[in-house]
Image 1 (spheres, one colour):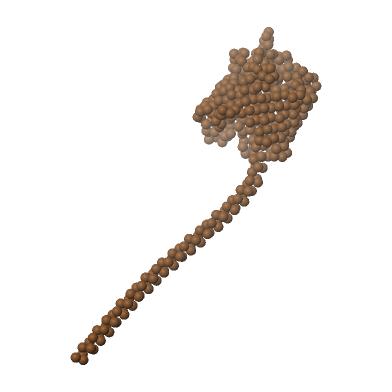
Image 2 (cartoon, helix red, strand yellow):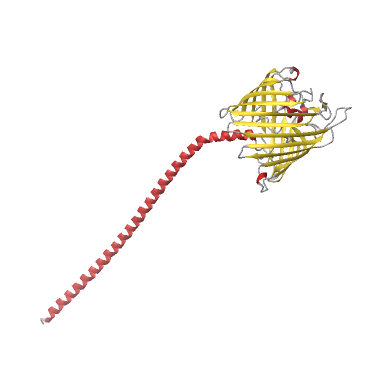
Amino acid sequence: MKAIPALLLLCVLALTTRAQQATADARINELERKLEQATRQIDQLKDTVQTLRAEIELIKERKSNEATQQTTTNKNTAQAPVDDVSSAFVERIIEPELGANERAETIRAKPEIFVQARYSALPIRDANSEFEPNFSLTRIETRWAGRVADRLGAGVEIQFHPAIDGNPEELVNDAFLEYYLNDHTTVRVGQFIKPFGFDIQQSSSVRESPERAIFAGYFFPGQRDRGFLLFGDFGFLDAAALQGVEYFIGAFNGNRFFTDNNRQLNYLARLRKVFDRQRLAIGLSAQLGKQLLPPGTSGNNKEKLFGFDFQYALTDRLGLRGEFATGNTPSTLLSIEPEFAPAFRPGAHSSGGHLFINYRLTNRDNIYARYDQFNNDPVTGRNVRAFNFGFFRPIGELSRLSFDYQFKNRPSFNDDAINGRLNLTWAIEF
């Protein structure tokens, strides 16, 4: 009987020990689970810390880059006006797009308007009958030009100042269509400016002197003619020497602007090369054809004209242009019916040219000087020489005011003649 209590005590002790071991195992498992959870949280915190550090560094780097970029932008902004002015000056001297087609512009309902007012005074010697004093409107023009389809362009220019002066037959300046064969070739038909030399084609809205050189008024009065023109460039060829070369080949009535009066064509050819690095352009021009002879006159009726021109920007402030033209003396003057020049003789030759220099004083102020001469004027048979100097300044983005003073030994008599010493001109284009 004594053995039974002892056996019960041993069972209780065994059960107690097993319970204690089970509790210890459970505790260990619980602690290990908590330890594993804490370890995972620590790893997550490390990842979060690294992410935060990386983001902070990225923000700092972006901020630094923005500050550097802003500084560069400020410098570029401060420098840009000077660069823009220099580029604009070089472009004005050379005019690399001289004679270009209208493909780059889409034609719009709103036209371009050009108005030019002038005050003239102090006639040169013997020029009273060829001088228009006081105030005048030398140009009132409106123009539509641009691309009307993918390969089709057009241009129309109406000038109103001839109507005010009593010459309504000169109302239409330009009226042409052009077809773009490809990116390098254009065909143009209608009435438009002849691509002979530089001065003939340069627009009055950008020309520095009041009018074109004297030879332009005699050889190409009105600057326009009616005909056909094929022009473009050689950019599709790999030859380096032909890059920047433009060509113009045309056939015209040869009527000096008005309706054909000799039923024969004149043929024109021109080459021009722009040297971008040297900021230089050189052109060669030629026109071959025939002209009218006065009634009762026989002999040489050929009309051969040859020209050379150059434009050179020596620096960002100093520009130089020159042009020379020579050929058969023109037999007629600018008129709707043939008006024969008094000093014309069959087979006679005339020549002319000018040398122009422009200096940019400031971003807006410019001074210039030009020597201009025409030999064997078909009206008097004498030589005409002129020297003029002037100043011009843009007023806003669209307008320009200019002053010009001229010394001239005798008057000239054809289109665009300037026979006064003092000319103040104010023009606007919009």
